[in-house]
Length: 245
Image (tube, rainbow, N blue to C red):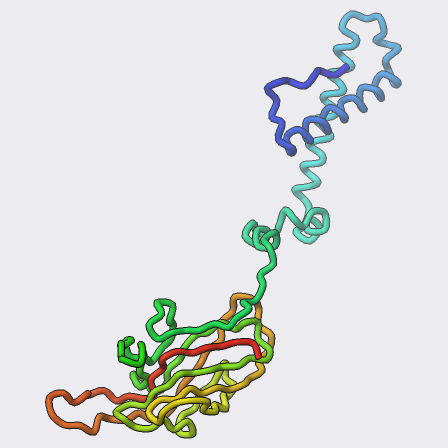
């Protein structure tokens, strides 16, 4: 009644399903035709062949009618039938990927780190106390830090004042994603200081960054002569650390 599967047939899931559905439709039409007019063709030369060809034509007509109905569907109807077909591949890949987890921390950004990303800083310099970057190249300076998922965080900064001045935390403003940091000195020797602040941020998705912002006065070199530094410098940053509180 039906032909065996061709050994060279495309056996991909989509092609195989289409072939099996097509042959099931032919079989259904063949049973219907045999019940309706099989007795008239019984014993006639080529009777079985005629019935099978009529069944094939009926199945082909069914396919054309189905394709016509599918072409006439609106986008909303297509989404109700099979929404996965209309989801962009990149979104499907992202949905199938393992869920991202916020960094555990602590995360430390050194002034000489190649991953240092910010604006308003001079190039990194090497000093006996370690690498540093001076602020003051612009009115404000920024630095991107891992968000660690947000929530209760603690920020620590290693700072140095220019030209032998003392670090005056009250004269400078620091913000993390727009929230002011109330820095408290926990170490230092006057010209340098390590300061910390606790802060609570909204929840952030894994992999996101927050922006550390410095705003404050800059100073000029009081020295004179050919070795005088012509830059106007704010505070210098040795490193910044962010961790969950």
